Length: 180
Length: 164
Image (cartoon, rainbow over all chains, first blue to last red; front, side, top):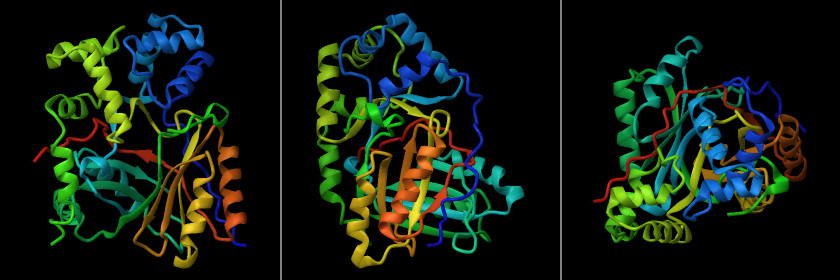
């Protein structure tokens, strides 16, 4: 069989400066903070850390970009944003960073990643996730991106989602897995 | 032309109360790093700590939020990737269930394309990740496109919800 699990993964975008306690903390919170009055203390208790240490470590992880944001993680579909389209673009390599940054700051864009092409099956190198309440809104948002970022001549495909088989937070250490 | 289809869900979302709407929209980032973060939210929203906690728990129970917590930058901890498969329609359900059965897989969607099954897999190491994907290839009999992130251009400030 043709094995396509090949190619080099991304190099670390942030220098790995995580110590063992950082990793334990990340593992402990990856399915969410406990909804109790003092969640950082509760996490600390389970790890043998003080509340202040948990808060300081989370602050540092936010500052160095390991944590992109800390807050309420909503489920778009349940909130009425029923349409989402993974829109993929075939951007010349020398332009992809500039285009990516242009697309990445629109509020209806929830992901904007460069990924490898897999020729001949897959020519696209920029992946964007675009949400909307319905298909028309998603398509209007894409038109807006095409206009604002000058993508009229760029090959693209719009992959609307049809069915969601699974959605939960990432679990990095299977041994600690708790299903949502 | 599709505008009428989603009215029931829109109606459901707009039935959420004032506190629910503000908790969902205003605190997707910058949850306070203070000992009692929900008390801090309550003070800003003119509510009580217990009401905030109970409301968040209820929103989670109802599926409006997946968690209150962190969104991690991809590949800063562990290894993760997007993956795609082209599966004949008759086998899509069974292959999707096979993919779902892996704890490494956290998102799995059918999409409108020749490549019709798209999932995100995450593991502690890249070796573990590739092993899981190769296992999926072998058990399903279909190749897996391995599409790891190379660069992230997105400024994640959450998602502006519009209550109409």
